[in-house]
Image 1 (spheres, helix red, strand yellow):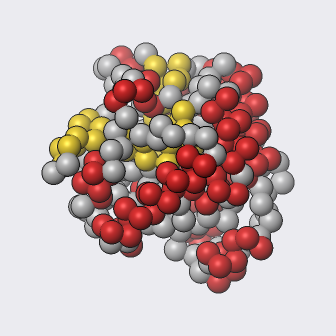
Image 2: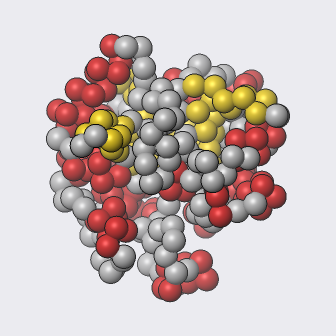
Amino acid sequence: MRNCLTVDVEEWFHVCGISGPFAFEHWDRLPSRVVETTRDVLGLFDACGARATFFVLGWVAARHPTLVRDIARAGHEIASHGHLHRRVYELTPESFGADLAESRAALAAAGVADVRGFRAPEWSINGRAPWALDVLARARFAFDSSMAPMRIVGDPAYPQRPHVRATAHGEVIEFPPLVDRRFGQNMPLGVGWGLRMSDPARVLAAIAERNRRGIPIALVVHPWEIDRDPPRVTLPLAKQFAHYFRLGGFQTRLEQIIRGATFAPMGEVLGLSAVDA
């Protein structure tokens, strides 16, 4: 069974809820690593023969359009990660719609006109933004991957398989990240620190178990997670853990996982064709 390999294309300093030196007005003065690290991701995927969905931040696309074109030329799907890496529930329906439009415009300027997928920064489409999927449907997005079935950023009651969400403006297919039941709760297994800390054999076993039940899964990686020389800054404790925990050796572990399962872009796994956009 084909599963989804996905990448959130953002800079190392695109961290939600952090002000001070990481505030938006300072972004252009911080050292950029996204081109080099995303090219490393592309090289890894090419070596493994894997294709993926790249959720590209509009802010990145506007500054590095050649990188976006390189991702598309390598056979990967381009989707939106929003424009300014803002949590959706901190926006209004109107400002969220504007952020989506700005993101799409940046991707279109980079040569990608067919953008039908979205992922919110920090899994921020949840009960605090019940209107968000309606905004996506109205903007003609076909699929979303923003609703995490776990506490803190989402809701453990959310389905753990791809499913259709009805809105006033049509349907949106929701594709959640891979989670696993541990310590009496759903924990991240296919994303972030949960993926980085897990033995590849454990991740592959979880993928195989879902696939036997006919459920495709989604893995999520960030280019900064395989940075060979990541910038080190002091963050609040929870952010520090999420951002830096077990970065060492992650590329090698990720390669084992990619080679041990079958992956394809999210739109293909969901059976969407170009005319569905």
